[in-house]
Length: 488
Image 1 (cartoon, helix red, strand yellow):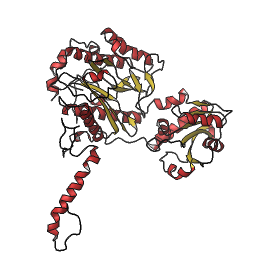
Image 2: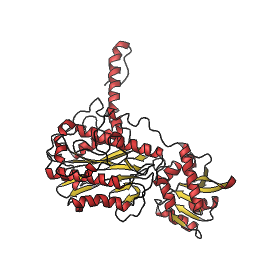
Image 3: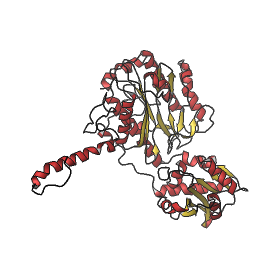
Image 4: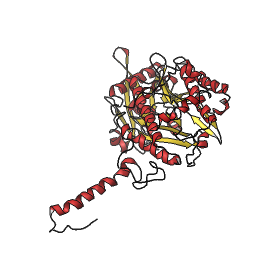
């Protein structure tokens, strides 16, 4: 549907030799890559006479819905056209709409297996329970996200405990601690379990004591590491003689290592994000503002089927500050444009960064060389990332390559982060991390060079470790890495 892109495999040694000198060949090829009435109706009017006004009213009503659908102003859509303009009646990104159409959310069967594995892990750790607030972990084990239930000072908690059944088999017992006056709403949560117990606490009672009295707590209790401090304190006071601790590494790893179904959702989310960047890139013009490009990206991500889509959009030297400066710079004749974008698909998050140039951009040769070096650093790290590798060694590989170019000092952040139900999650690919990379892990690979006041370049593709222990970009299905600033 989107065409086949010619590219070099990340395992090709020739790519590692990419340098400032051979970038000219890529840039020389870029031109081919571009391109009104209110009141009572008089009784003497006929049906035919009413037809015109009725049609006009219906048309106006339909048009009025456009801003709600596309999330932008009807008469001034500066995110689509330089300097603003009328809203186009046709969708400029309609070709993105079907990319993830067939994607399905995680099945109930997979949720059941997650709960069983957690219960087994708790039993192995001699622990009585795992407790989580609505968030990534509660979403992973019980389908309870912060979208489904907003956090407040009144705790609603997912509690999973291991239960020994026939033949020493461990099963998961799932309970929900809920404010009593919210119990009906809590029971509407789509928790994938055959028999959920609801523990209701009235306003005049201590919720943590109510939870403990309803559960069998004999050994340590693990709380999700992202749980708020007052939740920890509440259980520590209620369980004065039992250890209450953040999640053990063995519990954290259950969510860190993705299933095939999770990887498929991550693939589609990241592909849709990259396709949206490419689509917006083709509609950009010299002289547009960062805010205009950002609104274009928001529309493209929404049309592509992603929720909560957004994009950090930085032009020229603004990109030298990795997370931006808060200004609204105009795109100049010699500027790069940096897009760091993401959205979610059935809860799974994307994260893609491209630094691009337009067909008419006159990029300084030094900036072209920097772009080339960043691409090569990303490729080196992709080759080092495999099952058994140490996180700090992957970070060091990209950093060492950039040191050889003389620009290593301008690579100022870690190489990557885990990604899944959260945009940034453990483990991280950074210096000093002794985390071992394993099958099913998913990370970003995002080297960058930032020379303040001059230029910033970052390229980011997320990858996963496949069953053979090799790293594969989540965007590989649509071409993977950028080929040049003109072909993202």
